[in-house]
Image (cartoon, rainbow, N blue to C red; front, side, top):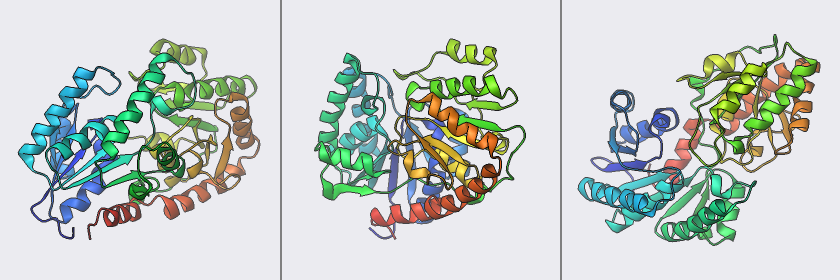
Length: 379
């Protein structure tokens, strides 16, 4: 494609507050090449729109989206609104992120003849996450498979963050192998996440995530219970908002952990860096991820990592080098890994240094964006 001068480039995302955190540097890459950038999200506020204009020089537009809903009429409305907006804006390219935008954003772009269409799979979501099976989950998974096959037949490329997701989509016939591209983690701007001195006293374990079962939040709380019984001075930080997805953990349960003295809960913060500076070891006991951004940020700030030997999560840890891998859903083994750092605080120091080295090697956003642009055919 070459130069993007005077061309409109559209991103379709499911959650406006994450745009500046996850997409700002990519948006700037397109702006530097002369493209007009429009970002569609369902929940813009006036403040966020102003930030988009001032920080990323991009236009913010609204569209209706029920992220966790299964109402076909609501999804049809999403498709119609996006189709009309794309027809009005006449973009040269549409890139979608996350399940519903990947389905309805791509369909809308194809319906109005957008010449370049790309999707990014950043994780498989609730329907594909291993765990409790019920009728709702089975129906959602079957519906998504059908819709992915349809929408991904209309894309030029589909980008995946880890090889497990790519291979699963290809093996299930959801996307043709020649369209699938392994991108790796979306990366972090390393200059904005500088390494911090190791935090040794008190030893502090931190989890940053939406409060969902599949993020391993309950395992984190149970491991805290086991550790606190022997090491009451150890600190546990849980940072993340409540959610509306089927796997959401209720506020009453989280508050019961706080009242029990197991952990401290920060429901929302615009900047997690002050909390990562207070962190000795970052913990993500998730059942499955794309490649988690929170872990990449912790690594950039020179924090060791305990995470699961699960798709996406395992991409962030070299076992015994910058942290440890534990089985999903196993609070006992998770607690044992935490105890290693309590008994051997030197691990916090040198494994943290290795995390920063690996972040520079694997998760530098500049390098990731350069590759992404190349795959999009943009110089």
